[in-house]
Image 1 (tube, rainbow, N blue to C red):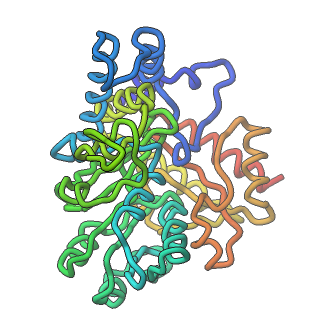
Image 2: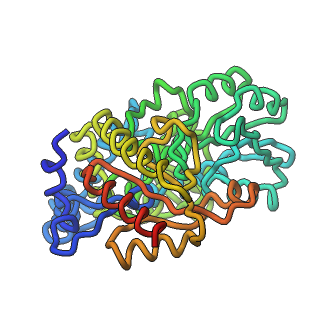
Length: 399
């Protein structure tokens, strides 16, 4: 893959003091094409969609629905009516959590390496609705245990909510097997696909997943935009969390009639610029090709991890096989606080990484680990980026 072909599209990487950016698992950079599509909305047709009949309004509606179709293809869905615009993955997960009609005693399962977006909603439901939230224990610390899942399922189990690919260590769960096991028992499956959709081909139809949630800022789109996929019949049975303008066919003082999905979940005026930008980002990523992205990330992470493993004082968190960690390397350095690692790399080498618990507090707390530093690669990174990073780490350890 010719990285220079794409790297030139990213303004921040073409400045005099451009950083070595290795924090894409948190937030990806935006290409000029996405920026331009957002600015075009604000400068050429900054109107509301789906309401007025003037030409600018029709242009907004067209752009909004074209973006929905782009996200449909990114996810591998069959119908645009199965794609709901949200603010992010977290909102999508909460829409399902609050809309399924779970009752006291209903059981929800997750893995033990979940982002807070797939932990806190279930704690919240347990506290206020009385559901039974349980965690399926891992195998060998990092791997999902299918046998443990089977043992955890009983007649009260209503939902399995699972992360596709971990933002902590890049490991991908056997989601297709998980879905098959759950469906055989009549259990619905909700999938956090935030860290999967930007990096590998995703086909929700082939997986047969009931719901999947993503965030645009993970695939070069604007922050504050995401999408929830749901099988259409599942969306029809999901109760909207909030309703109002844009969600109804009609309303009187006595009653109201909701529009069908996805409109019934998209209350009020939408972030049209954000949606259009997300659609442009989806098209951009599909143009690069996620097979190419995955191969490039594995290649660079193999170089990065190989050099890190040869340094005394480095501990890598996650599977030993680098091909199972995608573009993510979470690590600690002897004698260094993880926040100090990130600050030192930024201040002295202009290298951007993340530090802390990466919103996976439950996993770290259960193992008594204070957090890690995390370097995450994307398709716009050169080999020189990872070499500069590992040289800096070596310099820190020797100093």
